Length: 446
Image 1 (spheres, rainbow, N blue to C red):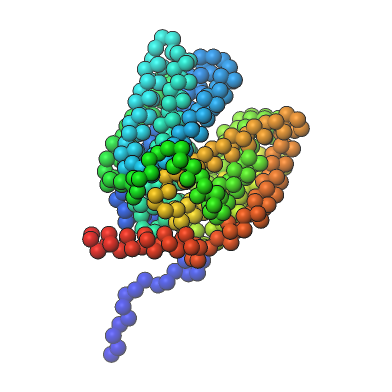
Image 2: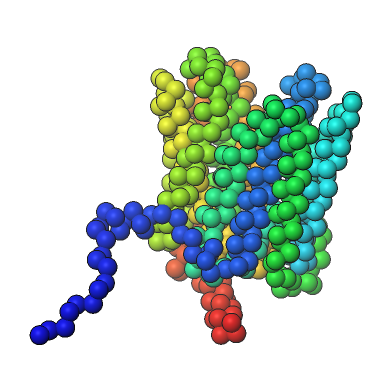
């Protein structure tokens, strides 16, 4: 009698295997306690911040009755973002990144408490909103580069694509859930309740960061200064593969950023004012779907081409949405645009995290933060001007066309970016060798 075959589960069918391979890779959440801490604390922090995202403009409009006063908050926050984003990157390369996260997180929680105190006054002060808004922008600009720089330090090198996608998922959850709940809370209990939830979330998230190990800088010889910032900018410009990630994103967002036109698109073009919320959430839904099915990204090596093609597809989707004859087709195309934007973002993040040396990572994260902030702000201005000079549809469609053309030209000029291959790129190979050696040492000592 022959021995019975071992009881092993059958191989999944081909289509099922492909579906399983496409789902988001959660390995970093299983293997790294510090990444779990960053993920959950970051998600809670961002979710709390979304309550303020709704409350501040609502309160400003209540106090002033002016759309200009609401829009001015963006300008108030832009200057600290530019100045302290670059400084925050240099600071993240000079101090313990865990400590910087704690200090900036605590500062933001305390500043929201000031907003809460102002909100419960019989006559809340408008100037307090602007002052605290500028200070919150400063603290956020100082915090973000250190958080981005921590990601490759807390996971194994081959887990970086999954870590980038998971980090994006946390912010997407906050964006989808936070504004809706925040709006309901404000309608029921007022802006003070929203500020209370925001401050609590930020405080809890900051306390969670205490669980992180210390992450001192690898080189303390370069203090945060203009010279250090300049060194980071020169490094980014010299590395054409890195420069491509910044320029492609800025070109794509500047040409095809139609969010400012959504009210006019819903009311004047689609003639469905009640559908405005769908237009605002469509891209976020598409981004989340792309994130949840991002397992395949780990098998891609030509990241520059992936960024380029995804950015061009983003522009094409936006342009087609501008031509959509009905609401549901427009929403579907905006969701598709959000998915392509997410794919582009994942591959940009992988290039940064897999190739930038630890001593430069904070400064490069600061430059990256500016690139994805300035592009959309300029894009909204472009969209509004073109819409006023022509029509809403013309502005959206022309933006999509210009995005496709602009990204294609950028990739053509930056050939090192288009040819980037993570298996052979000298910077990727060097960092992979260094980090694999680090991972091996940590596994032996565990």
